[in-house]
Length: 218
Image (cartoon, rainbow, N blue to C red; front, side):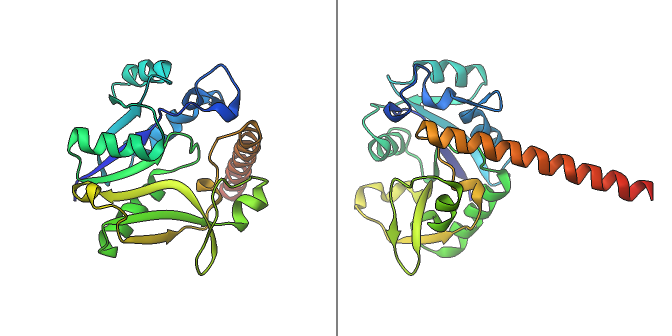
């Protein structure tokens, strides 16, 4: 199944209150959108990557073009409208829609999401995390949904683009209990949490490397 990744990177990012465009805000000296694109490029289930920009994100457009990644300019109205515009404009079929502000997304998670969609038999899939995870991290969720569990959308969805005009589609909910996809960068507080998590991950990696070295020495 050919899956196109559509990265939504055209929002105003007004809550950040920074001069720099939100997709270009740095974590660990790299723009957050670069983390997303790296994960997508290394996900074997993704055949094509398109970044949806707008008049609000001209520098993001230039940077993405430098990386030789396909770009589409959208009206920049809102997340849903820009998604619909891109799908219709390009005639996209199976589309993984992902926010440009998920710095800890991995190719492994993306592959898992695509495989779940292929098995679910529904035209749409939404990836959620339990609300307890962002709360534990000190993040404030924009939206909270109450189903069997209290869930928070991650900004990752898959949709059958051929059915985009049918209104609200039947949807599978995929719950992933991972901190990595609970972090969306929308505020300065989110950015601080992300930097803290990145430092913790680096320290864990160093410790694991040290343990591995000790094992080989014995």
